[in-house]
Length: 137
Image (tube, rainbow, N blue to C red):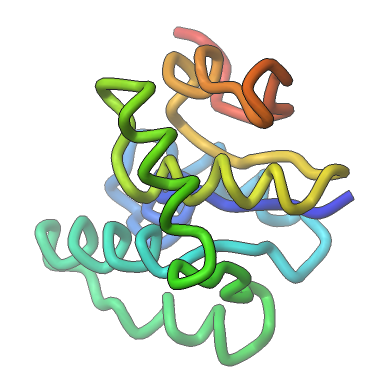
């Protein structure tokens, strides 16, 4: 099963001050590499890390080690991203890209902190997306 990683778990893993840090560290120990992600997610991760004055180089190290792999071509899939963003008012480009990635990799799970959103999003119009999120508080 492929693992697709959203922004939240990466930020939590790389930022010791994040409220989900312990959860993300424990989760990353269980996930078989490589985790797949996309450029919109990397953009968000870098933004949030810099906002909290956290070094972004460990993000690049995950890519360098092959623990994280870019696996999405926006130039090929932007029409589907556009359709999803039109359907879901709250969906951003990173989430839309993640949903498209789940459509491309039928046996996958998404790592996210966005339980509320990924409970609503559907792949291929009606299919529930298998995701792992922090326990409800």
